[in-house]
Each structure stands twice: as C-alpha cells, then as structure tokens.
Length: 394
Image (cartoon, rainbow, N blue to C red; front, side, top):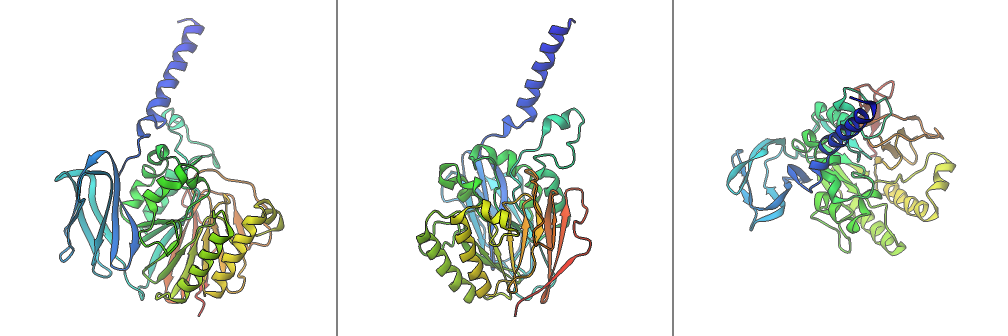
C-alpha cells in the first residue's frame, strides 16, 4: 500500500474511532436510574429515556410504598417517601412493567441527625468526557491531562459515601443536554446509583436553555419562595446543607437569596451547617479576587457574611480547578474542590493553608463534633500530608 493510501486509511480509521469511542453514540439526553433530591426519610429516583415510557419503583424493603409515573414520559422523577431511618433500601426500577438495565438500587437512607460516623463526598468541575481515542490505542493520558472524570468517580465509588455533593460545572462547555450522557451520567454511573447526589449550579451549567438541563437533572423540589430552583437546602445525616447560587444576575436576586439563607440557617435542625456553592465565597489572594470582577466579589462577600453569621462551619466550592483549604476565618473553613476531572489550572497559593493542582475529590467523615477531610487524587493518593480535622462551630 502506498503512503498516500495508508495515510487516507489511517485517517478514516481515526474518524470511525472518534465516532464510536468519542461519545457520538451517547449524545442523547438519556440516563438510567439514579438517586437525587436527598432528605429526611426520602430520596428521588430519576432518569431519562429516549421515548416516553412509564417507570415503576418497587421497593424490596418492607414498609416502603411503590411509586409509578402517572403517564408515559421521557423524564422520570419519582420520590420514595417514608423511608425508615438509617436503613439499607433495596428497590427495582421497572420500565413499562419490565426490568430495566441498571434498575436494581441499593442505598442507605437518611441516617438521622445523630449518625456517627457519617461519610460524604465532594467533587466539582468534573464536566469533561474521557478521552476514549487514547485509551483505544492503549495510551494513558499524561498526569494533569484534561477530561478524567471517570478516574475521579472511580475513587469516589470505592469509598462508598452515603451522600455526594457536586460543586458545579457538571457539563462543559455550556451545560448542553447533549453532553450529559458522556460527561456525567456515564462516568459517574457507579456513584449516583448507590448514593443520592445534590449539586450547586456552575456558570457553565447554566449557559444552555437557561439552565433547564441542569435543573431537570439536579433541581430541588423544595424551592424557597421567590427562588428559581438553583438554591435551596436539605438535611441528611448530621448535615444541614445550604445549596447556594453564585451565578445570580441582579442584586435583587442577591438580596432575596441572602434573606432566605439567613432564615434557613437559623432554622436548621441538624448539628452541622455547611454550604455548597460554585464560585468561592472567599478568595485566597488579591489577584484571584480581582479576576472575578466587582459584581462577583459583592455576591461572594454577602453570602460569606451570611454563612459566618448563620453558624456555617465549612463552605465547599469549586470553579477554580485545583484543591485548596483556606485558613479558618471567623470560624469558617472554605474547601475548594474544583479538580473533578475537567482540567487543572495554574494557581497562586496566596494565604491558603494547602493547595494543589491535581484531579481529586474530597472525602468527609463526620464523627460527633469533628469532621475529618481527606483530599484524594485520581490515583488514590492523599493530597494533604495528614487528614484535616475540623471542629463544629457551637
């Protein structure tokens, strides 16, 4: 074969591989059953199908009622309510009364406010698709390469957390529904089928359709008065989680969210108050603070002060593609976990206690009044030299 024909054949093979392994076959907005909308004695079973069908969730656990779509639909959003506290729940998901692939669910229900120990995971900025082309030819992307959410998700799955918190930018570059299967549902399948997931909206997540795909996947049912579904709170285990929206466009929206947050934290019934958001509420150096712009600084400063006044102990955020642990300021520690697999950015250490540019997630373990944090990279190595112990604000 002459060099010209060989080159043409190689190009054709690469194009075919790109179509098959690059994710073209997964571009439909579809997902098998996954767990979302966690809360006391409840969890949602959600999913998306190519054509309208009727899902039925049939619990194997005694005392839990079955639920069913009222009519065939592409978006399935069913709530299992009245769950016993701190129980292993098993359920089958049927599609048009037939078993569905991935339809067996097994997870832990809300363990209650005094649960100890209680483990959860935090990850952010994961929204890239794994590079299947390199893998097909036996190559492993270099350390620090882009688009490795599957490797991070594998570490989360191995830890078996009871809850997963996502700090936003789930899907790059624009939160398009066409990219959810490749960049979230597929790489995180082993995680979201065994633990409920809650997410803060990232700036990339809201670029398509006004954020409709993000809200369909993660949107909370219990939206505060005047809210649009991008912020709210829930309680699970010893945690009261305030999910914040740092992408707001007007100061009227900021005022409404700030007033809600103050009342929400005041009424928290669980001992640990934490906040989950996308853009950090406190910036580790003046350069980073300047880069985000004046409006974002005012938003972050206002929400930070509400967290301080409301008794929050830890703020988890993303946006910056690295790991960072802040100093304790006014009793609050901020953890930036933006290394979920999309890419790693260069950073300035500033006044943070610890920072590292590595793909990772954060494992959190609550035992009484102490939360122990371990930042685990995509190869299972801990980033901090020792686990970080944070004492709850009283």
